[in-house]
Image 1: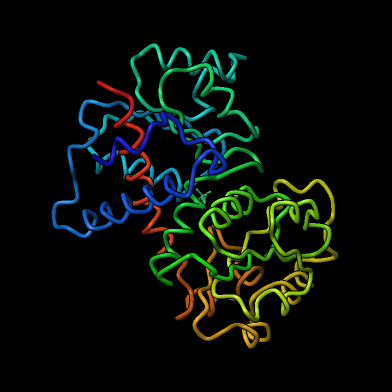
Image 2: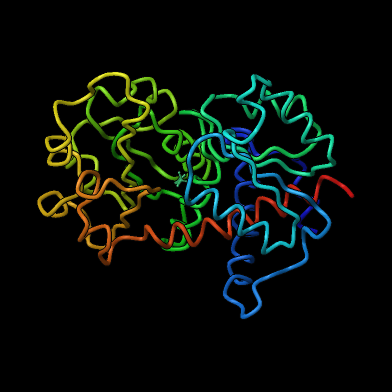
Length: 311
Ligand code: CP
């Protein structure tokens, strides 16, 4: 009766979910992780449902894992890109997706550069809308897979010390991670150059720190964020090499990391900037396990949403 606990047709932001709903997604994902280890990795849960994947911004991990999740759940799938859609002729996003919905599509998975695009669509469309990243606002399934990985590795999120380091200002992952982790009882520190560290985040209940050593020496988990050069309109630090030596996890700064701390990164990594290669590929890194867990989490999200859309 798992579906009875889930009543939402959309996944827009973790701020709309309770701790019980977050736990339900994590528990559902854990079941799908078992499915993904079977010889036959396919279940009929979304048979007869149609999912459209619409990625208006580039993606590797999120796009491929959503598509694979839909295939594993036996959905019918359409993949759309903005460059081959009539958006380039001037059609609005809302008109485009109303036309897609008219084809009796059940769920639209979308990534878009505009913060808030998914919220607007979810209020105007009756199909399910899943946020695969909206501007610098949110990336809920990335946060869910991050939290899933932390819970799997550390047992509990209650009281877990999580440091999120890097380009907090432009990071949708940081915003979603913070919201989800605080709801699940973790303690969050954000760290980076002062120019990339919005002080208003303090209001969310996180510790704000511009000294890497102070941020990471007691951390159980260190989530290193990508420097998002494509979203930076100004110089936020003097040079990449200076940033890497002060805020990267490297041969020097790893000395401050607890031996059992997890090193995470949502990808794509700027190797040698956020994390040196030998650490990204080393024993404390769970970066590729995050990707593996992303598939199970996205199967869980799609399964729960499809369950409340009706026939
Ligand atoms: N972490 C993440 O969203 O990666 P992609 O941009 O490759 O999907």
